[in-house]
Image (cartoon, rainbow, N blue to C red; front, side, top):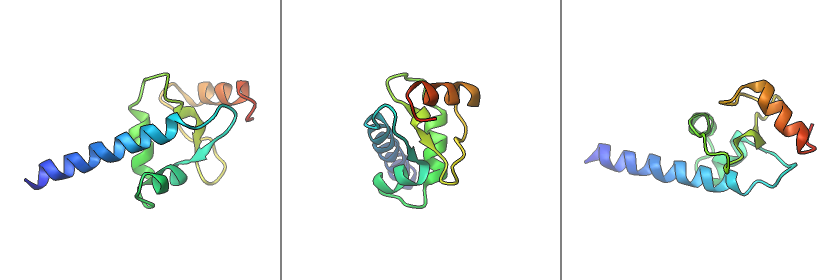
Length: 92
């Protein structure tokens, strides 16, 4: 039963993360930590990165989530592509 509850919590957290990221406007960013806090788990910023790494839905702008230290971080389509997207949106 614990595994089912844990999977349900993980799925719920993933859905929250995706919903938050979907609402990041063009030309703006959020940090992985900010997304984690809004999703209800302030220490789960690494989990946010892992969730976004698995997303290939172009409607969810994962490239708008960056590291707290100012580094743009990783992107499942490559860091160069992430940088290009952020630049095209006027962020960089």
